[in-house]
Length: 447
Image (cartoon, rainbow, N blue to C red; front, side, top):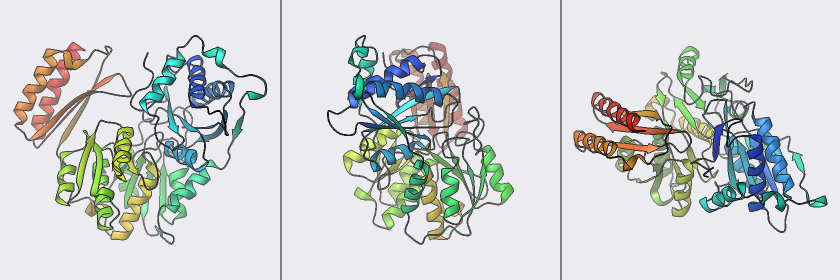
């Protein structure tokens, strides 16, 4: 049984694996694997704003405490806030209860190690093996060895102060008008407070979570409301997070979307100018646009691609000693400041760049020309390896010939949902749409 996907454990609430009984066992297994013989043995648990977060938080806490580890509960907070606090408080692990951009009916569990990075595969495998171990219950502690649960009331405030400390003292955002779409998620307080405290004029939308409206037609995956609000309020920039705020998508003053590739481009160039880009290298994924690669090459910056998932970007950055990378989807990793994609830090640093350069946002990104890109998600029931199906392999090869070297095709299983993702990129939009639909049709037929 495989519990962990690209980004933790995720699924429909009250269906396997996200049932309270199974979550209890996940908590027990994680505590057994992560517990040390000596020390505080403390796990921090944060969550987004889903109704089911209360249930999962209780089950996880019970499982962890039953194995002799203690728990610090911080309530709703962005995923990168958990990564930061785990390191800052010198705890043994951090857990986020969130299904990120998924609808509220889903939920998930993400783990961070003591150093703020996603757990390595071997530790995830050890947890999976224990979850299905019939003898797991016999490993529980008793008496005074049972763990305790505490609540940290000022967690969001600590994270906010840290975010502000990542720009030089005296920096002000006065004169910048910004619209922030919080997706009714974990950053509904964080990003608006940070930007207001630094002097920006902030218009906030979708900042009233009710347990079921997270990501509901809003946020990074549905930016139409943000675009409209930017034009309506004549703002200089728009910012949209997803439910757990580890990603940020922008729109310029004209209401046009600016994605993660463009943010990576302008920030990398700025880092190079300032002499802060370690290894003169940017790390991104196979999904990043060829236009970004060409822009970085033009500016003398090396470019490395990884598998999709910010954990793989972070791992490659760590291995190579690099300090900047991210994903087209808006997960941007400033590893000088945090160990994972951090939406609020990304928002602040883009506004800081606008202030330093004194240019409209549209001008900052105007040099980055992205190729047209089509992404089609095909829902599947079968987990069969599509690469072993001749018909799918044949349609992909045929499409690559028709692109004639002027584009890319990427077909891959989602790491977070039961879907096959078909991406086609090239210079001619009509052609890539046609090729994308042809590939998706064959994938549907055989999966």
